[in-house]
Image (tube, rainbow, N blue to C red; front, side, top):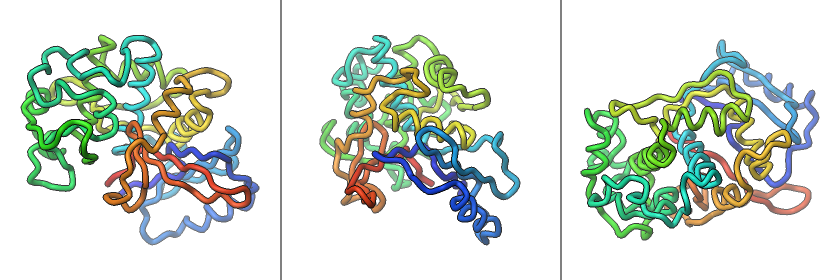
Length: 291
């Protein structure tokens, strides 16, 4: 397991701890016996106030952020809508991918894809599930695998965490933009945020893996979190519309009965009410982080 502190996290108010105190806290993990912590970046009002790396890692180390890549895919759907390459999350998958029309995924609304309610018979916690992520990864033709995935529930009726649905979102972005999702991410998100070094893997069908396999530095992960905290603004530049950010991090689906770490789910983003003393309560939102 690879752990990164401050990964795509946004709160209603920023931490106010002085950097020197945080440095002491972070230094205490230098000798942690588990050796799975790689880096921590702490921002306050957009500025780095504490930063530390562990187990031979540096600020330039790329980390596979695993399923946090799903949250980036969700942001890219929003940017595609902002740029009018896509129209509305109520649109069906087949609106942008006509070849999917007669499949179980074809008539699913984009909003149901983004909230893990596609209805596909895909559940990553169940190895026997027809659409399990391991089977997707092993498929010689991932697109054919997705199009052949059966339906288990009516779209929009049930939250079921799975990578196949997030993969479908990445395919839709590619179809709508006319480029690979990695290329679209570079020009529409990563370059505006100042990223210089990153990797996003493609599958056997040459589609960017919208379900994960994105590698970023800890600082760049923190930049995404700061942009989301800023309602789509980063260093004064509009990256994503505020409207999309609000919808993405909103608790659109209650998941507390199936997830011990979060209470709500938005557009590939988790949320959980957080007590921010002093000053009352707020909302904590964080990108996907599954192992």
